[in-house]
Image (cartoon, one colour):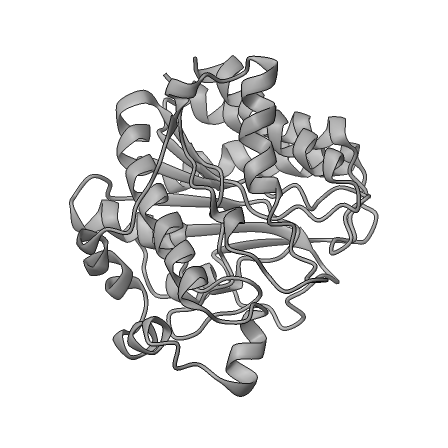
Length: 302
């Protein structure tokens, strides 16, 4: 059975006029339930767990984590995060992290598991950035490695923004291969070096995007030989996205998910999927694009 981490984090309000679409985290499971893609049993609610601290602090510096928990981040450093820092938002990050850790174990059991939130790939080992404070998939990777549940991990990051925090965290760790496909002229403007970066020009079409993916992904799996995969399935590759500059359609984004998940399924690779970004002006477009990822997961794995 497909298992999905869901916590109603949208209930922690942001200031009026804030651009981050928090309501998508509530609307997406409603849509999946309404259309019959999922049932209530597909969802589980993560929590803040003291057991996660070992993995959080193996990924992020102790000093940074302590300051984050005590809301002791100010000025330029706080502005880089983009959220007004609060206990509710720190609790949100810790809950997201627990969802990804639990999804790792469920992926090992069932082949695939998902997190309605997550994909906080801009969080560095020592600081937060761009709505990201704790890097959930990096923490999940360290959880697997430290407990010998995986020995070689591939992170496939297809958000329109480069996974700069993830690249920095695993820069010197040969056990984790970071693969980021992103907009060349998109944020972050100073990019880190992933193990493999593919920077796409503005207005890249469905055809060119999928061609690139088909040229690289199978070869990468053969080269890396992972025994676990993280997939960051951001839908900000859409031409309608306010924060992206690529030219993909809803159907193209759906085909991206179909292709990635089909390849991983064919190779019998367990995969944890975190949702990542999506900032189209029409919330219905965001929900449809994200829902396609879950539809593809059900169709291919279950």
